[in-house]
Image (cartoon, rainbow, N blue to C red; front, side):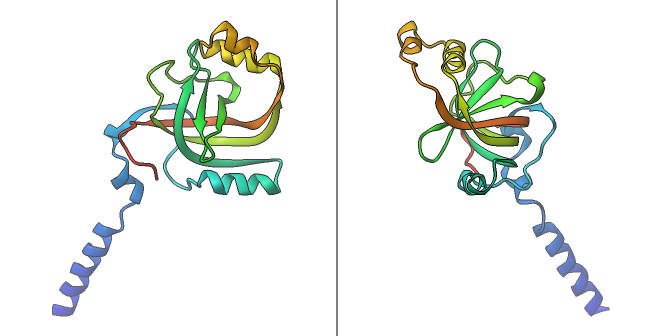
Length: 167
């Protein structure tokens, strides 16, 4: 009987300690909002891992997390995330089916799931994005060259309060 009760106590301890890391790390109160497909905190990879995978593939399906630097001020139809290099990655939303808040998201963290690829963005599109972001006429006029950049089409997004640490 003593052996059984010891096993039960050990089992309860293991069960209590085996909860998902994300459930402890990200409480619902830290979530600003869910957008698009409902996604979770499982299988998030680092931006560096994503970039390494892109060296071997034209496009990949991934889930990553990074800081939001800008959102579309017109509709919330795109956002930029900061990469470790300091550059930004534009995130659009699959089938134009959902939007994120137009303001106040800068500095918050986003978990995004979807397809990323390297793409050449033409001047007209870059100017359109600059207009959406509320850039000045001078800043828009200064855009004169196409840009090779990362293009992420997200199927789902979770925005987290900026006071939380990244995964």
